[in-house]
Length: 199
Image 1 (cartoon, rainbow, N blue to C red):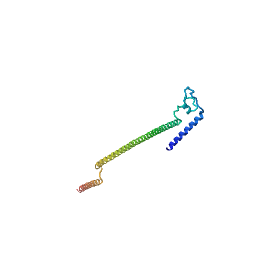
Image 2: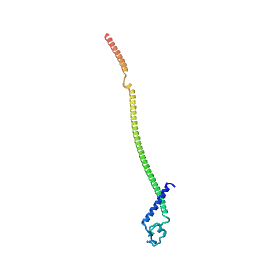
Image 3: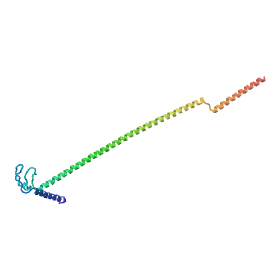
Image 4: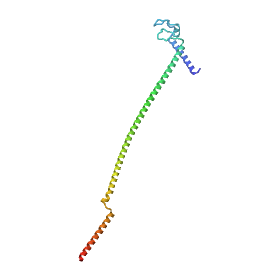
């Protein structure tokens, strides 16, 4: 026999004693032989178990000794305690389940909002990069067109250069040739004049 069994026996004995003391205080003497309410006969066993009994209505039907009644109530109390504990455990588990579910829903909502924000910022960044890239491509195209136009103009200038312009060396040579020819013409004119004066 362990401590719990001894404690249970002690509780039963104290309860039996308390019930007996209460009955002794409240009921003195032998009770009525017939019920005051319905007129039915009260058995001797009941009269001995509950002294001063005057009515059957509202009283429990006592079968066996007070010890059996108290042991039944202890079993009933233990069953009620187990039922209460199981109910409490189920309620706590339900609360934990609902709390975890709500927490997971909030985490899911926060993650959804974060991913949505990230997608929006990524789309905005992509649009910005795309517009910047398009601007750079347009600028590059304009610069390429400018260089091509400059190259065409330069090639045109090179083609027109010999037609419209004379190099210095060419000018000096042409001028020298012209001057030499003028000198020879002047010399011939002088010779002709001199011959004309001599004749």
